[in-house]
Image (cartoon, rainbow, N blue to C red; front, side, top):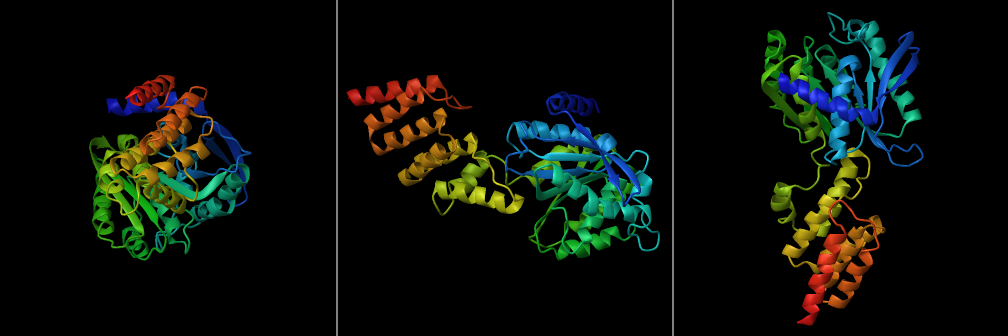
Length: 381
């Protein structure tokens, strides 16, 4: 529990640089106003064409801050993309908002109104004001974690990823989920979590649901389940959120040591081809382009050198020049290519020219000077 509160404090502290914007939406469906909390990415520019994944947080009164903090922290380190986070405050309306009929077990009355509010009013409201992409995530906890499942039953679900933290399942929901998830035609990410000290009745149904859901054979259905130790109904939220984001954005993550050894080095094509495919897959899955990052550049350059793939290294250097023309990165990797092909004079020119450019996260003036001295020593031999 102590670690949970330390994490919350960390996220809240980080979130100071990404303060929430408070908006009010006037809803015809709900016959009144609703308060929203909105977090935009750092350095968000509404005039840019870039779009961002949209995360809708139910129970925003208490669930918004830990999610927004996680997003801000992980996106800062490029583990996940920058996202737009929208929380819906429901402290005084949640039982009505999540109401379902006791016979059909589908949303009814105020619950049906809230269900329609999401697609008919909230999403258009957000997308009209902000650069949100079509890759949408919805997050809920207990009652709201049950409610998010109803959006799966649309012919074309409006969300691509679902985060159900200790869901309080309605009757028939588990069977309905099994039927629906088995016939999905588009990729859907689904994360569910419970804990050893979760509410007993909820935990029992969640474990039953996991048994059913984990048996589904559908390559379009991407599922992750966690059963945390030493956590309860509330503290599991702090542990489940980063795990859920990790699941949803696995493909987006920088190339790590495991991916490098098991996928990059064993890829049938060249290392450069692997990089191109990875970024194309990201755009296909998430609906937005990923900006080329230094971590992936280093990994592909290392693989190219290990395989003595000069063509791959040349293509990589051209891609870097295109994406980072004012950075030392462009000079460093162009010089690496020239050095690899044996043109030491040109490599030296590249490294010298790089001294006038801007340092990056991994390449600075000292590194450029070291390469210059190294080349000069080689030219003396």
